[in-house]
Each structure stands twice: as C-alpha cells, then as structure tokens.
Length: 297
Image 1: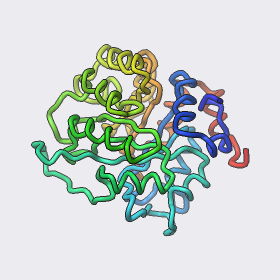
Image 2: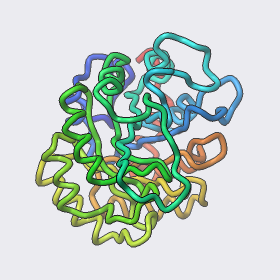
Image 3: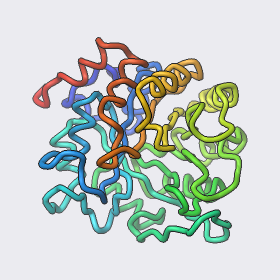
Image 4: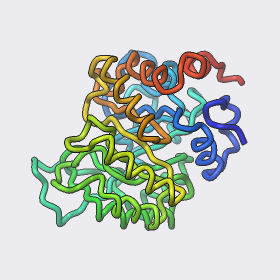
C-alpha cells in the first residue's frame, strides 16, 4: 500500500475506503485537500477548477454545493455521472460536502435553504455512493444552521448508507454560536462512525488556538481517526505568507490533511496559495511530483 504522497493516478483506481485512509495516514501530514464551489463559473474558461487545483498540487478534491440529485457542475457539459468524468480528468479521489441542518437551531444570520441533494439523508448518501464519490465531509456552509449535534447523528447515518470515507466537523460556526473544537464532541463523531474530523486551522476561526487544535488532534488520533485542518474563512485568498504560517502551524499541531477552501476568485483557492501550502508542508520535491505527473501513470 502506497502513501498518498507517492501515488500516481492509476493507484487510486482500485483503492478501497480503508486503503485511502491508510494512504493518508502514511503520508504523515503531507496531504493537500482543495475545495471548489461547483455552482459558480470556474476561474478559467474551458477548464474546471478541479483541473486547476490538481495542476497546482492537490492530492484530494472536494466539490462544495454539489447536488447529488441534480448532478450539475457549472462550466462542464452535462453528463450522467460528472464525478466519474472529473476523476477521469484529474486522477484524484473526489469528495463532496453534505450538510446536516439542525431545524431547531437559532441561526445568527439570514438562513440559507438547501436543496435535498445537498442535505444529509438516506437517499442522498446512497446517491453519493452510486456516483462513486470517495469521501463525504459532513459540515456546514455559512448560515445553513448545521450544528455539532446534527453532525453526530449524520455520522451514524452516513456509515449505514455510504461506503466511502466520512469526515465530520465544522470549519466555522455555520451561523451558530457553539464550540466547534469541543474534544468530547469530536470524539463522539468518530465513535458514531466517522473516519475522521474537521477542525479549523489555528488562526482561522475565532478562538481556535494552536494548543486547542493540538489537544483535539491528539485525542482523535488516539481513536484511530484522521484529522483535517481547514481554511474555510476566506483566508485562502490572503497573501502567501498567511498560508505559509497556517501550514506550519498545522504541522506543529500534527494534522493529517491540510484543507484550503473555496473563497477566492472563481470560488476555489488562489492557485498560488494552494501551491504555497504544498511547498510549506511537503517541500518542492513532493509538490512538483504531484504537479508534474501524467494522467497516464
């Protein structure tokens, strides 16, 4: 079993969910996850954001706002299975966000209403499985009303109706005032069936210190879970020095996956910032290896 750091596109084709998890852990904190919004026009005409993120060193890709029933990606021709088409183009594992909205929660903003294909349900999870989606992030976009309690329940449901990897947690408050790095709650996600958790990178969400992130990461690792450190506060469009500082903090914390969000032009990370994150956490050798490899390998 190869570490993800050393994988070629052909290595992903026969990977099980457990193989993918093992490959991530074996990479020792040098996995880059890029995110893009598929309901917005892509950064560059004639090429998808998924392709751009891959060209700038992404190991994993997550498609935000993807509706598993409508299956539309702006800038892409309509196809029965756009997930498989993206996989063919980029040779990377592909994930999506599904959102466990808490109908009883008080949202500190004008609440966003989501379509059924973006909400967590038995039907949406089964549809994601049928499309061949490699991993699901149970999380919340701004002002959607996703709560930590609802994420825990969704973790149980996801492992029952979906065969890929499941990551649970929040990048920011999603409109709610609650502790999003509560260790007991994060542990509950893993015990409920999640393969890992999301925590905001230190210096992104208010009050998330490096010490708090370190303690949460250690606790999740002791349960065998994977930790994704997220940049989901539009700092993906900040200067490269900010990205470098966040990446080094992530390394000290000990996370497994470095996520960079979709808040720049074209609703994806700034390409140079995605490359900077890769250079910071794994150096030129491994970053250029990912950028340069052929899809035919």
